[in-house]
Length: 101
Image 1 (cartoon, rainbow, N blue to C red):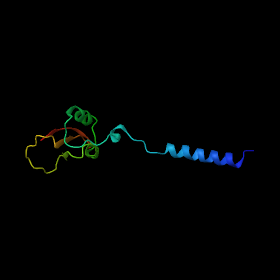
Image 2: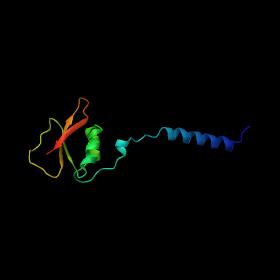
Image 3: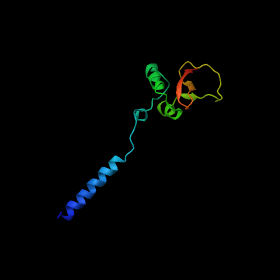
């Protein structure tokens, strides 16, 4: 027969294993750190857009860039610092392309 200490240790160990299995998994898209400022690395930005992110993912990754979605009202001044992105969405609402303006 097992001692009470062994039973408690096994119970704690199984509880820790069960808890570790239930932790939320982070995907590669959400584990990226936010990019401060405007878009300077256009190649990295294009790679990110190629993943077809949701608008919330875009805003989390590039918090300083104004995201203009179809149907949104925006002024038409010309910005040359890549600080405002007019997105093109697919049927599922994911960003598939767009332009800086």
